[in-house]
Length: 142
Image (cartoon, rainbow, N blue to C red):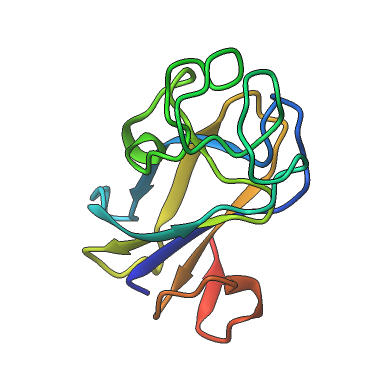
């Protein structure tokens, strides 16, 4: 299992933008080693207001839009690893992010923060880069 896939599980818009708002993703294995994650790919999920991002609208912010996304590009994949409560990665409803991992994820645990802990996302270990890990035979939930 050398791929980590994080998937948004719902259709929540509770923070004003669609889907889970994730930052601080980390993997720790049973021997205490921390895995190195390398971003592979991502896909934004749906937004309740469509793809258009304008100030005050609910959208998946891939550009800096004041009054909705602050001055932060919520589509910046660096935010999922090293972001903060103010600079998180916005998944969009049903979106996903895939990372290559430098060790086998078997026996490892995944942690991440969701801005208000009210939008659900899950992590999966896979042998290939799967965009739908819940339906893939080569993935296990972490």
